[in-house]
Length: 226
Length: 226
DNA sequence: ATATTATTGTGAATTTAGTCACGACTTCCA
DNA sequence: TGGAAGTCGTGACTAAATTCACAATAATAT
View 1 (cartoon, rainbow over the protein chains, first blue to last red):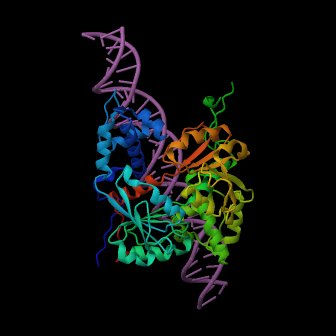
View 2: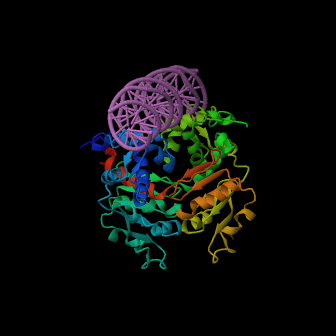
View 3: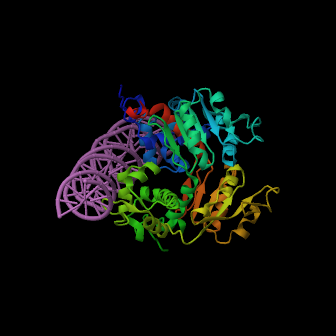
């Protein structure tokens, strides 16, 4: 029996990049794209800070993990930075994704055209509703959930937008098919083998947390608010 | 001119509770509810850990900010803990919320019955589509967006599920009406006065981040996976 | 009764993230 | 050409969050 231990990132090239930084990269990328499309040639960490609402020192620090990308006294060249991030974020190879559960939330995803600015493509969707099966939404074909094994065809990433009570059963089938990552919008916390990455986005929790913060963590009030 | 400076939480009762802990409270609350409904009388931090996928030491630390809620060698009494969190999370007073933008994502929220387990209620929704205006979804009335000022009636929390290009305009109107908190599902980063709390949930960024992590941060593979 | 096992609560250590503040270098203007 | 203004990159610091690890205690079994 072979025991392999890889603590996160220890073996990888990009391993010095903090997770908090990695999570902000897609955001930077999107805004750089906007700037580029607006024809902007240069941008400072201060400007970018105002746009993405991240402290400018944090932005400079984040960028610095990738080397010296800017010029002192000048800022960053938008096109260069964009090109750099395109490579870093692997924007050149497309990642194929399957969506499970074509309810309202799932449909929202299907209408969201990820390919516009990036390399992620929802390739197929699954649902149990015979009304939906066989149709396309946003050019994505909808198959019956029973065909999951047959159609999935090596897709490594899934978005789960199904009712909570179906979560475990569907998850097990995805695991069986060799899934690598799951974006879980279900209120259930799923159990998967260690090598599979799951990100939970829990809409009810987000809303409750916002309300809790509003009541218990007053924000600063300063001059700018009069 | 009066200048008031309140750094987050410094003035409040609950102020020792770390933000990371506060964000987990709604999650704990939901699972305790589940356990209680299943008739479970006691639970250990280890069991809870497996259910919510949070390290058991973190759970014990989180609970400890509220005092000694458990018993050594025994664990926590589910009913007691639940009652305690009900008070802490203000589950007794209802928070009214408005939803702006009844597209697929907005509709998903309207069907989600927050009242089932907690104290948050979507009171009204707004949209520009005349087909939708005047109807109800999940018992929530939909008004025309032009009636925002007229109908909002002191609601302090809004969920933004509108297209990106309308974001700034709608945000300004909400600010004008005295909103306190916004849950923003728009890819735009909105600008508001300091005293207003905004939480961003950016679906495209979440998906891109997952893909980035999959490629660059391999997870541990251990015995349990064979 | 007593031993064994389970489990908390927390001090201390560690890890991760964020911010300050400034030297170095660039650009731009007069 | 020289000086002022702008901006990066980063060492040092601070803050926040997590994890370790164990004494204290409760429950349970014999």
